[in-house]
Length: 162
Image: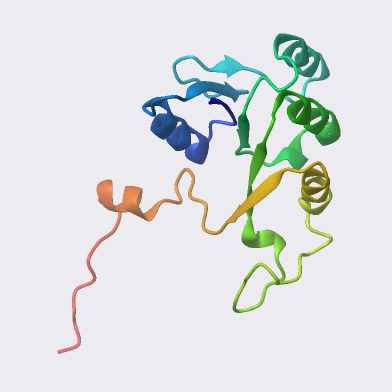
């Protein structure tokens, strides 16, 4: 299976590390900045780079593409989606539960905030047949409690109740 991971932030790097060791996975990783072995550097906000990418990868080059960055932040999200959906048979976007209305229990039927900056791009993504994995508590730099413990940043609070 040919897999493309687009975006090598905190989550993308970890997914790539897991997939590298899987038998039958041919992995390609893409990032504007982060480099792990074999990463192709593409700044998808640059129109010239988008064109170069579309020339390098033909229709259905990937069985699965996983996008881990906020597509709405690109200079032309629609151009990126046009190319991504042409080179990918299946596409998954890692989204966030922040797009849901803030109520105590967020479930799939919870209303989506139409004024959220992700709304238009995610609506287009779904219209094109892509899937969205809405993740809560996506960890990133400085936001992972396990890293806080490893670095000694978490201290036990003494019980001074006596």
